[in-house]
Length: 310
Ligand code: G3H
Ligand code: 13P
Ligand code: ZN
Image (cartoon, rainbow, N blue to C red; front, side, top):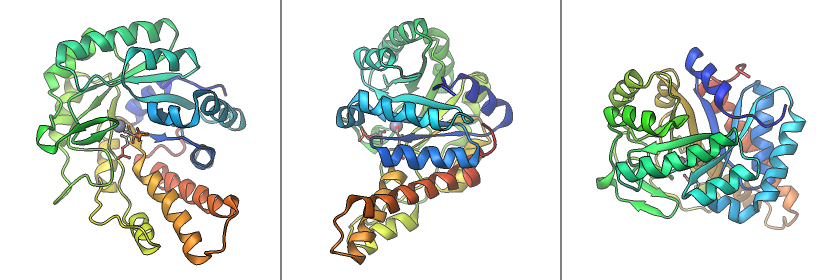
């Protein structure tokens, strides 16, 4: 199957109440681990790259890897998405290079400017058959270069969300209900504002909702990193139960990057700790790829409910 947009998979997710994992990629092992899990689980999947990931890998390398993944796994729908597009030019570059979906992240602008800039991206992307994710509200923590302090975190306003979607024509909307990027999401108890999600869904029932900053920060993976020489104390993410609740409550896309970073780092640290003489990259990257696959499998099968929904 050629790379697809997220349109059909989101329609199915809203009808059948499950979420699709969107996993950040920047190298071959990530692409392979994620797509192998999706193929085994018969799950739709979104591969996504941030602008810094594109700078790291190069857009041609990234697209080539993703295209091979789609060719090798013709039975599952795979979308390639720009994560946190910072401006029109970056979104246009991705559209012009074969991305099937782009995010324009205007959350750092005021409402009117966010509407104006998002609409520009929507008009261009739609003219090329590409779908657009937009963001309204602010996540706590660090988003790419933007540092938003927790006290500035602004939940998405449901009535603004309705107006925003109408005026921009965006295809999906990322909302802020208490998640944040990175490994330190909560100081005390994890808490998400499911009441706000419900109000948003009531106002825009046909718009797929996206949850950023949604890694579980899987304790076993944090422990693995720390056990083998890492120092990541006090890390905390969104518990699986909350992500499952989100998946059956109208969230269509759940973004995961931190858990993949932890899996890759933990597996590599383990090899080096157990065998300091190792220096063949295949020796430490294969276990990393295997652990990425296991991590993604768990999310698709046990948490998001996307297994067997391809
Ligand atoms: O939300 C951001 C993603 O985790 C990507 O992060 O800009 O370091 O690639 P990055
Ligand atoms: P995490 O940092 O929780 O993995 O979130 C990733 C994300 O939202 C990518 O856009
Ligand atoms: Zn994000």
